Image (cartoon, rainbow, N blue to C red; front, side, top):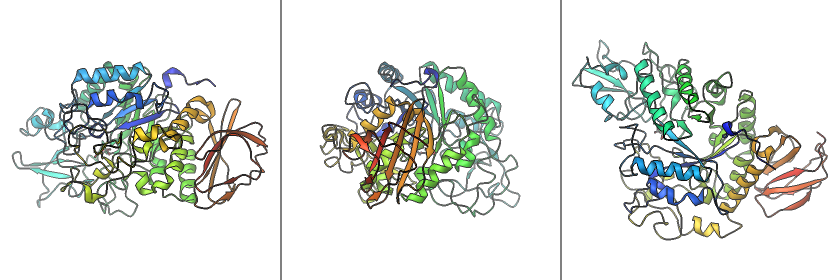
Length: 538
Ligand code: GLC
């Protein structure tokens, strides 16, 4: 069946692949991944029969950076860090990606710069600097001490004292990441120029970093104590306070609308917001119309869910119920900030997890390495002290391309140790039809070829069997029933309300294929199957 996506809304139902540039592929042997390395590995992603078949790359920051937060502290928005290559390498990578029909998204980090960014250097040079108001500066309280009780995501006060000018500056994350002042129109203009620079170079969109923290209370009111679960699980310590006045302010939506207006100058471009907020609040970031706020926004409900039937059900139902009409959930189950799902949920659930992610309605974002079941490094094998002070290095180890000690990642000494390339790597799994990698390929191929799975409607079916998640995906004349046993026991399905006698197995975590009678169907533990129904009477 043909893909009926309108070309200018190419992201609907897309599969996006996140690359952490430092850890993907190292072409020059310095132990650090680079852009040429990615280019040499594009076959893995799209364009050959053995490719994953993803629709787009999202590249985590590759800008010059002193690496206090591994690139999320940008010191020049308009260049490539020398360890990753040059602007010419970047252009070559975008061109080669486009040549295979692969879109290319960059990471936009609009809320803070590096302490070494020339804007901040100028801003802190004196109280009368023309860029003073590009950042958030405030006096000490009359009795001394920081202007408010706000706590930084990675611990400690959000305020850093600048002895030279006798004021504090604000940082939501590390002290090396001073927050830009988004109430200043000059900042909004400067960031618009950054976006245009990359759009003109051909990028297809941005993942927009940490947007929920873009605007703070202008009166700097103290945050109340926290009585709710942490907004950003797994990132830094629990802060002990509710970031009522320092994050998630209503004015943040003016910032998002501004970004959207800039993106709208370039047809076919997409903005994917990162806001670690509950799905109720996420709806607001998806705007109130077809051209308002983000096109997509990460939905962390699944990522935050334990692997338990009732929790997964709730995550799916909340997502389905709370996304505004005309918008799609954007799911990821792993990323560079959290323990990998193979580590959180367990490796034995990797096939079922892939099946879940890729058969739900919406956009699926894969984190490089999940397609071969990479797991987090045991902290004991990580260098001491860790590169990332917030302790997220475990999920950032290099990609395992083959079974050699450096996993085919580098001919030099990898910046972080590899976990287990001999046990899990692309080369071995490519050749094995029963591997996790082969399952990812099948899932993505089936999804791309099926209007119902790609972009169709979702309708949950409850009470099919203990431990079994079930839903229908429907588009035009295609109807697919998706069944996934998330439990550890066999489960006999009761599909009497769905009166199809049989259907065609499109994809399964097991080796089921061909025609399948749905009556009396029993699913093995962690088995998932997607069946195209011959007939259906709801
Ligand atoms: C985002 C990034 C994370 C970074 C933080 C500050 O949440 O994903 O890696 O530390 O923003 O930029």
